[in-house]
Length: 388
Ligand SMILES: [Zn+2]
Image 1 (cartoon, rainbow, N blue to C red):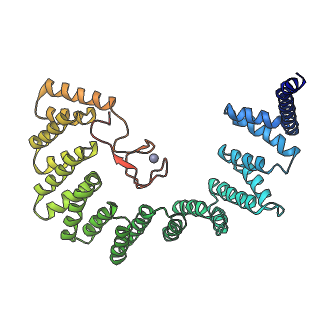
Image 2: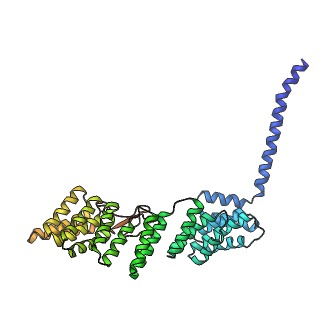
Image 3: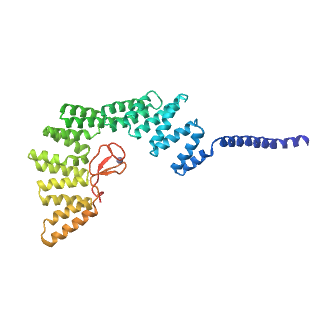
């Protein structure tokens, strides 16, 4: 009997040991938690509720009490920057960079944050220099990517190309899309300066960096128009028709003039009609109607409008149809039609032309890099029927 009772005590002993261990563990956690100032938890709570102002106040309170709370100061600095309080963010990060007792990795992180503060403040020279200092650290690839975006903002295209080549080497991520665009920027500068050889060189490098970049054909077309090389112009136009007909709206006037000079005005209208067929846009239809009115006359221009609007109704372009139709009538009928056209125009009077497929930014002109979100090649000519 005594032996069996002994066995009954074993589970009880185990339970007691477990209970004791749990108590020790809970006490440890509570002791650690008590060591953190209550302002820290208040700050976290505000962060979770997205009350950033109050979170910052609480974290400032903690870091005042314990200037060595490193991670907290880093978090605070980045929070300040996101709130646009760049001066305070820079102050925190600079004081961390100046501390030589910090572990190497934390000091480098503070340096990376400091460069981003300068970048956000628009102090590009200083941002550039701090990003450069991160060469050889764990943050090098990220720093060089950000450096490239600083250099883009400074329009320092040659240096930006070198930076993107470094990003490619460090991260293995292809950067051809950016490198091609930077060479196109250099080609545009050379074109404005009348340096034909430099234009051709930059375009050749841009094309080898990114075969699907259609800006190369667009600049080649403009360069050919400038040097009155109609063969090169028609060749570049054919390439654009194949690769990105939507962009032809950007050179519609030059296309019409080119074929007019060649004594083939009708071919010019046909080219615009083909581009519009392949990529129906609001502006494309408008340019086609302009060219058609000049070359083919009102009846044909109306025919283009009717055909396009039947396929894709658009209130904006319908006003054009009403205006053209009203000119074919006289008296009250014509006045009524014009009145309706004006009402319709006012109802659809929004910014026409282009929009960013990435952030939705709308603009009357085309951008290769969106001013709203800084994305490259995200601009589109607004499709017909999406502009009401
Ligand atoms: Zn955008």
